[in-house]
Structure formats: C-alpha cells, structure tokens
Amino acid sequence: MRFCRCLRGELYRVFHTPTFLLVLLLLSALALVDGILAYREYRQNLENALTTIPMGENGAFQELPFLQTTTLYNSWIGGHPNSVAGLIFIYACPVYASLAYSWTYLSEEQNGYARILVAKVGKRPYYFCKHFAVFFAGALSALLPMLVSLLLVACLIPAYRPSVEMALYYQVGSASLLRDLYFSHPLAATLCNVGEITLFAGLWATVPLAVSYFVKNRFIALFAPYLVLLFLVASAGRALVYRSFLETSIFNYLQLTGTSLTQSPWMLLGQMGALLILPLAATWGKGSLADVL
Image (cartoon, rainbow, N blue to C red; front, side, top):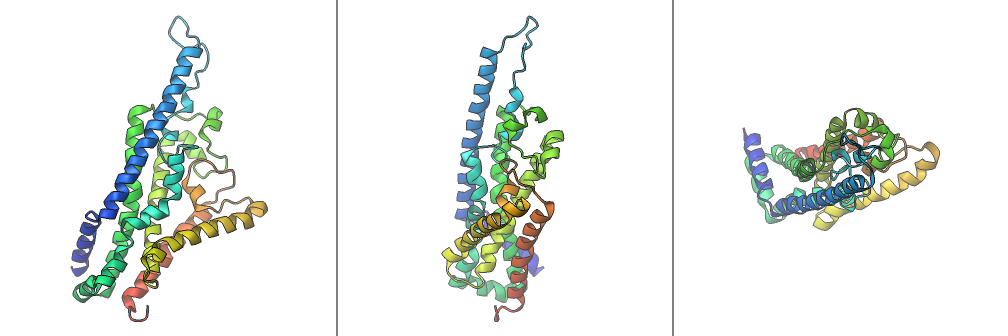
C-alpha cells in the first residue's frame, strides 16, 4: 500500500516536472521539422515523376516512377536515412532521457525531501519507486516524439511497401537485424524499432540515477555516463571491427539505416541487459544498505 502511494506520487511528479515537459516539447518540435523535410523530399520526388516520366492513354506511367523510394517507413524520424534530425534524436537519446527526470533524486536528497519520503514509506519502496519513475520518464521522452513523427508522416506520405529492388534508397543494411522484417512487414519492423529506442531511453535514464547514489555532483552524474558510453563505443569499434566485422555500437542497433557491419541479437541483448541489471542492482543495494552505499 505504501509502495503504491509512493509510486503514484512519483508518476504525478513526472508529469509536473518542467524539464520533462521541456524535453517533450523540444523533441516534438524536432519530429515536426523532420516530418516537414521528409514531405518536401517526397513532394519533389512526386513532381519529378509527373514531369519527366511519360504517361499512357490509360493514365498509367509508361516507365517505373520509383515512387516507393520515399515512403512512411523511411521518412519518420527513427528510420529517415541521412536525416540530421534523426541522427540528433538517436545520438542525443542518453542526454534527453537523463534530463527528463533522472536528476530529481539528487535534488530531493539535497533539500531533505528524500529523507522525509524514506521515513514515511521505507528505503526500498522509495528507491524502487524512484527507479521506475525515472525509467518511465526516460522511455516516454523518446516514445511520444516518435509517435508524433509517425502520425505526422502518415498523414503526409503514403505507406508504400519497401521494395528489395530499391534497397539502396532505404539504406537498410543487409546485416541489419530487422532487414527481412522491414521488407516483408515494414510496419512491424517500424514498431520493433520504436520499441528498441523506447526501451533504451528508459534503461539509460536509470544509469545517471544509479551514478547519483555515489556521486553528488549533478552535472557529473548526468553527463559522465554518456561520455563513458561514447568512449566505449569508439574503443570497441576500433578493437573489433577489423577482426570480426561485428557491430558493437548501440546507436547503430537503434537505427534502421546506416550500418554495414553484422548485427548480432546477442550483442543487443547483452547491452540492454547490462543497462537493466547494473542500475537495478545499485538501486536494490541503495534501498537495502543505504548507510553503506
């Protein structure tokens, strides 16, 4: 009962936290801009087809118009190849997921509010409620802008089924985990990609929370893990790419486009599993042995 009350309180504060709302606003604006640019690309492609490809008496194109090169599935922000907004959305994911709500633990600890809640509901319920709320806020900060992007692009660009013959235009690598699903069931592949990004954003948001149990500087707690991640991505890529040609960058697993290395489901599961287990273990330890940690 105390756990449920504490959890409701944390979720209530998520939706009343200015940084969470600001992150949603900025990312939604980024999704809108990317959708408009994708529509301009589709419109130019359509105009070129109408003006350069002759049409028969029955109104059909006499040559293949290549309209499928621009479709819903390669125009939303998570699957838009060579999109600056899409790259920002993916590579800045650890930043905005952390800014959404991860910093609130240090704020509550510094102003004494954490001690009040611990006295009321207990250490373990408080820390696990905080952990879940941080995960929820991080996941939602990525999910809602992606839904905005999908809905906007679906209203502007037809959902042509991607063709394998035009794979060059989609830039979905032959070694991509979702390649076969992308060409057979593109909507399912898109939803899987949305789920991957959402899960990563939620899991990563708990990393700065776990770091803040040990480091009391808010800036270091929020941004140092991201710098470490970038260092590990670069180092692993240099160490393994010429030996195994195995994709090690989590960012390339989150993108449907842009990788030519072999993607392994075990590599993805291992990285996601580490993001799940390590912060959760730190939270369990903090709730059980707060005086030690």
